[in-house]
Length: 360
Image (tube, rainbow, N blue to C red; front, side, top):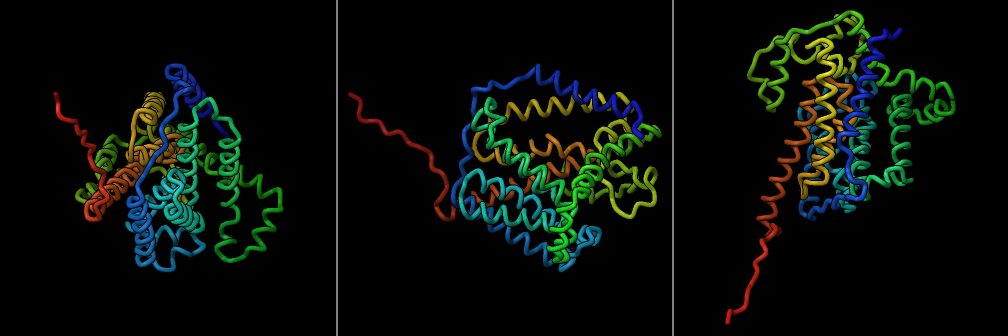
């Protein structure tokens, strides 16, 4: 059963959202400019995405296609991490630019990631696309059919696919269709969904007043810089928010996490309110940056904004920072590669020179 404190935490989060939405409300008549990318950038991004998938296969082998997700996770290395970021960036760019190559490459690789068992790639990319579309049409049209229908389809698919993806990986398509005709599958997709699991984590942490040492903040600081942690021999118990072995012993599969529980474990109830303020302040900053920023840097902005909107709730501090880093630094790498290719192929943007006639 849920204890009262769990309800109060989510009520406080809701109140925080309402208060900050009153403090900052974007002008519904202001729209952002569409993101425009060059054909060279699209080709570089698409090529890198395909190469990263090939390298991930070379690294993990057929284990990527194993129906047991634990085996899939155990086989993955840094090339899959690279692929995960590139596929989401490529899919977002493909939809934003409406160019055939990145669209097919991006959506195809995200679809493959979903087949493997990673629905979060589709969820993050889908939310980023909806945010982007709303920004260019204006918030006053946020409840139009072009935004509501895709959002409902996305939510429905993410919840339901988990119930049948193992059958699909085994090639048991008839069984998957049979399961989809069973109403209990749809009920189970909600009852056993990740939001309830992460809620249970917070509830258990609050129930037992579970705390983690402040030394675990070292791993948070190290996660701010990619690969920095490999130079430090940290106690595994102090990396991230470790709770499963103590609060959920005996589970044979890994659990997600809960950012509210992480802040409570570090700072108590003060940490809960600290996170609510911090979360809403960051969301407010993203909302402003969407309309103030221009050019290529808005690509990682929308994807990171998508992460901050919902995905951040089901992860701890270290994993969240790592997720942002993967998108940001992967995009920077692609952008640098694009500029180098553009220079070689003479496709780099040129400065406009204004020529004046002779003055009399």
